[in-house]
Image (cartoon, rainbow, N blue to C red; front, top):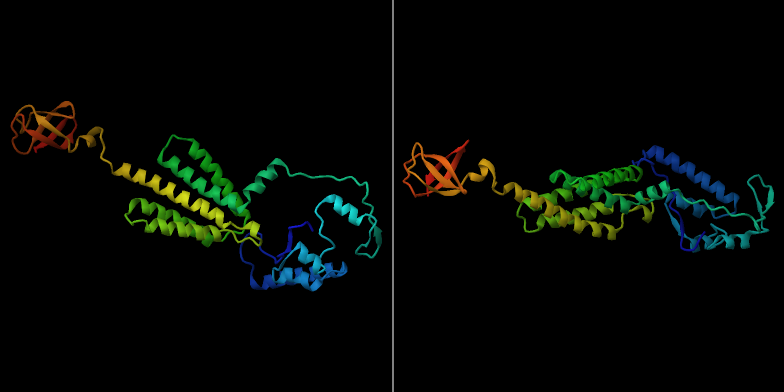
Length: 314
């Protein structure tokens, strides 16, 4: 093993992320335990300790594995392997002795393809969580501000990549539900006066949901606390601000068309009852009123019917 690495935590899990039925789990664990015992015993390793990596998901550092006779050595590079094992005699599983001839052997390095590098990054649970939230925000901005295009394109791509990653990772749907609840609370915070209670609850729900989202068997396949903290607060602020802007714009009085005329003040240029004229909004309008209004009186528009307005005296 290389320094700083660990081995073990080999308890069988479902590739779909779903829980294995109890009877089937016992069969799978029993089969994996028998395999690891036969394999390690044949190599003269600590079979009992290796079995715990399957039955109890025990994990061992490189130093612990060396001390407990699970491995031969801790070596940091390929040249170290060559120096240590060149000329060493080993026995294959059919008991044939073989002497390793490593000195002068060619070393071939297989790098990941560009596609594999991209997908390996996407499958990082921390990156997947960021992509999912960025995708939701991008799509929301595009829906509320049609025509921007860029947020919609970036958001759609990010969200699809996140779905790909979550399809491959062992996702805990309770964590996903908490993240959706957090977004709902952020939206409510923008429309209801809660003095920050809803936003605080949303941040707490998003942090808890992020930590629970991926149930990986090793720390590298789980969302880190630093990631959840780094995304929870910015997402809370951005969501509340965006929703608040949309909410306020919908409540704001229209300043154009018929709706923009309602409530506007003006001056009666003639006597008004069944007919007359008023000067409103920089324009002369035909007007009528329920009660007679004398010329030069201040009036307010209460109704718009085509090119005619109904007014009342202020």
